[in-house]
Length: 220
Length: 220
Image 1 (cartoon, rainbow over the protein chains, first blue to last red):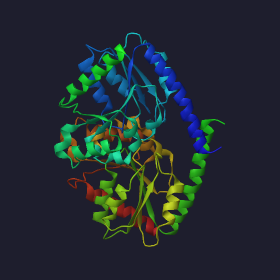
Image 2 (cartoon, chains in turn cyan, brown; image 1 turned 30 degrees about the vertical axis):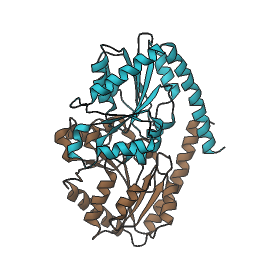
Image 3 (cartoon, rainbow over the protein chains, first blue to last red; image 1 turned 45 degrees about the horizontal axis):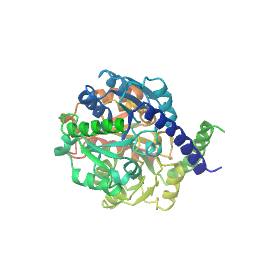
Image 4 (tube, rainbow over the protein chains, first blue to last red; image 1 turned 90 degrees about the horizontal axis):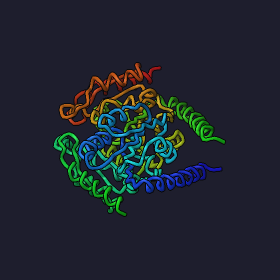
């Protein structure tokens, strides 16, 4: 038995559970995001700012994935939305089964938007479908503009790119145009947003788009 | 056969090759670093600045590990040091065998310091010994001060922490003291440096320490 075979079996099994998740989410009319990024790109901050802006119009719930600690769940909880923390205990990505278990512990009926925040890792979560509608990759300007070329699978498998921490651009060598061009070279269909959770710049455009997606999924 | 068993076998096999690498490196009187971090924490920039400062006194060679592209090898090559690029082609970490293959293609006799730059990933490379003398984890101030708590294995298994991009601290909410305290809570034996590759701050202390390590390993 080769490692490749094991990996394929793991992915096939994950895919089957992801399909079960997708049916469960569809049954509840839920729109589901899988947020991925490097550690510290600002997924949790983006989520906090998104909840603060949308919670009066969209009913949001959150599943947090982390290698260790419930620090992120505690941050999100303060915004008054239901949140479940998955601790992978060393595991480098979320799998559909972990999300299935977390979802089973939640009341999904009164929820419009479920955000799954994955483990901070720009490699391993790329190939694990969780049953989401869209994968959102968050890239921080501080990581440099070459990351889409160096970690292409994540940018290829995502539908949305949020370029975060644009307030820091004046102090960096990395270039927004180059980052955007590199991402679109890997995946020309990416929907791209530029945000700063510190200044709020770009948050309205991102939240308005997200709200349209949630409402569109409800009517279809 | 459980996944845990497979993982243990993989690690045991890796450990055996890492020991072979260690003997090879010792035979050449080589001091070897394994540099790990999140994507975009500044490993390559730190390496470039280190080479620029040390190359007149220390003979340096580099092994670059990336998921895709030879962008980093091309950056390092400009400094006139021997460099071999490993492309993992989707793989999330370097293994001892890949380093063994890369080392076999290099002339190690005229080298004092070999730096292995791992794939940008704060999870998976933590448990893979490459035969190095020291694991150096680079953490960027922009990633926030909670990362040692959320990704403890990497900080536990490292001997050195380089806190990079300290020039950006005035523009961030994250706090240097908290980051340092969190890292030392996970691993009290960490040797900690604070650097900026943009301003050069802290580079002399890091390079002087590294030079002492290299010279110390030569005489023992």
